[in-house]
Length: 301
Image (cartoon, rainbow, N blue to C red; front, side, top):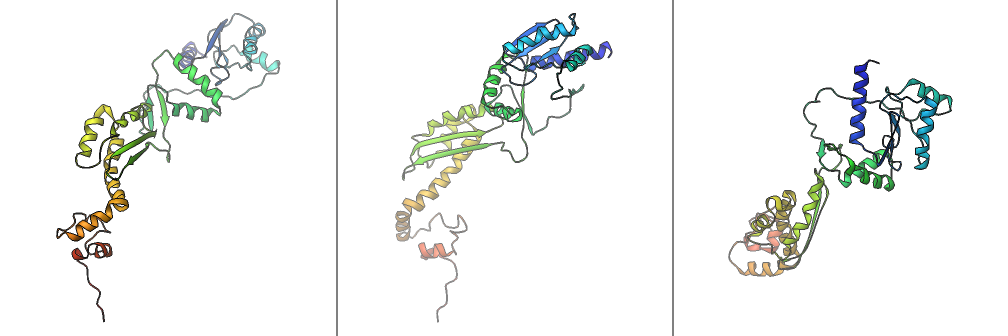
């Protein structure tokens, strides 16, 4: 291998170490020993970085006890930077190949960003959970990862690939109202969003408690939750929920009173022709507001 190729491999290795630091690190004669409570091979292995002056047997004997003391299985990464004699000695001593890997890099930018990939400056709990699923690790691995991530000293981003069928947004709102449309309670959740900080704004929606759905509802939402004070999607949902609330409460509580008033009135109800069921020629209107029914009357013999 040429010096240029060896320098390239070393540069890639350094980037890997910087982007995925270890909880504990020891330098042993040109090798870097990384220990992280067993979370990921890269963060729990010995890797060559510079030529070693020790014979292979002595080098292995110096590194192996560090893993034993940490109650970890020793792992030696044999990269192009390793002396071939080290691998030969390991094989002769009964060590086995485990989990071969292939490192790849791109010399030039890969082009336009893929819209299915989300980049964040901080690792969210969703990102950590996905990483644990990919690695096949449980909560102990997640605990080690949470300790490891703050150790990253170089600029970093965390990428999440949204696969087909996965939600980009998963949001819910629950409103508790009385028959006078006064909001008594509100629960807002963001279980999936493009950025992990999106869910942090949900407590702000408590300002909706005490408001009344009616004229000025959307204006009040904009004043209290507009811009950086809220989430556009949740605010839009609350606007639509006003209509749902009216339809629900009218059908449950205010319907009889409204029907009585409108039946006694000569004014055409504003709700007529507002939907298919309330079309002026529908059987619903014929039953509730017969004087405003415009459909055909049944002929009787």
